[in-house]
Amino acid sequence: MRHARALVAVLGLLLVMSALVACSSEPQGENVDPDQVDSTALPELGVCRMLTPADVELPANATSTVDCKEKHTAETFAVGELPAEFDDVDYDDSKLGEYAYRTCMKKYAKFLGADESLVLRTIVSWAWFRPSEKAWDDGARWYRCDVVGGNASSEEYRPLPQTAKGLLLGRPDDRWLVCATGETVAEGEKVPCAQDHQWRAATTIKVGEPKDEYPGDEVVASRTKAFCAESIKAWLNYPARFEYAFTHFHEAEWQAGIRRSVCWAKTRD
Image (cartoon, rainbow, N blue to C red; front, side):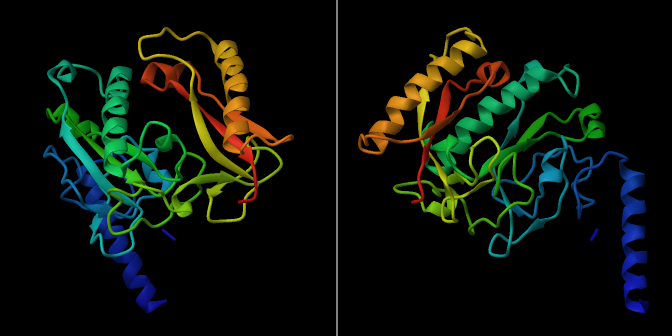
């Protein structure tokens, strides 16, 4: 990844890689554990790993676990068998992703101690994995949900505490809340609020009910703009002048269950 001594290390790495290729040609992250590659067994709950954004982009993951007392960027907070309705579906069936989203999101919020507003305003996020394609073909039907120290815009993940359980209970530390730098939220970098920033994800507003059909991008954007203006004005204690921004989601996220938009306040604290 990233010379007699070095040569020995490289040769050792090549031997390990060759052994893994013999087991599975499917990428399953870096620093993989051969016992996890193509495993049909239910993953272990509560273990930690050093995951990267590149690992999270893959459908399966066999990265070696590390002691949670040591540096890590991911912790497995939920595992389970998939319902019988997925016994005969394709490996990349879209309904599988929808099920994983609903299941992991609910368990993720409970694990962190966050409500549905706070869960959208944290610097951490979650990823889910399924068995490898070979294991899937062999009948494995499980999911694994990991909390990770970053979000979709992160180039690298931050280390997590020994456990992320209860991370957002009470008044969360600014290290775990999301802010943004730059003139605009859209173009700015998302950073923990403990760092210098110009924008804070201060509130969220509801733009629909659970059973509502998706009303379209324009309606969601219009509702978000109007509601966020009032929400941020109140959050800033009704100043005469203020600046705000908003982030709204689209149909794919709506179908997955998101009914909220994020409101940002222009602030330096």
